[in-house]
Image 1 (cartoon, one colour):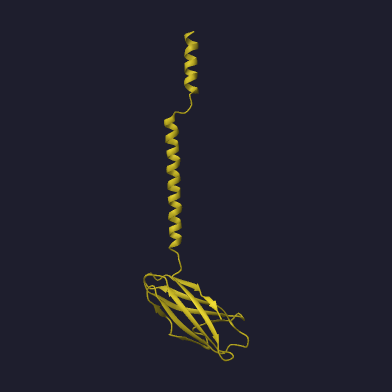
Image 2: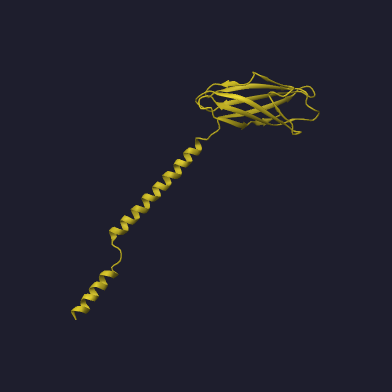
Length: 160
């Protein structure tokens, strides 16, 4: 009989389940893992914010006499240190791509152009010799951060 009682006590002890302490520790471990996962995600989002554009650009175009246009390009430096406007690429409606070195393109002031920290620079591009009906479709600007050497092409917004 003693053997049967011992077996019931043993069976009852096995059936008790998980203690409250083990449950609390398990919940805390899950919460800590969740906090670290959230922290890692947040850090990755902060790194993505660091990849903002070095600069932004906008442009307007005035078509003067037939075959000629004046493009006004405003480049805004978003960094706390100077940048250089290195190159300008103008895509025309007929697919032709013009740069500051192309025939019939005059850039004032000449490139590279330094833009001070957190400021703007106005660059005027005169285009001559456009074929009839050809317009400016896109303007892209290459800028370089003078402190890090990081270079970036940005698409200017605007038109005209």
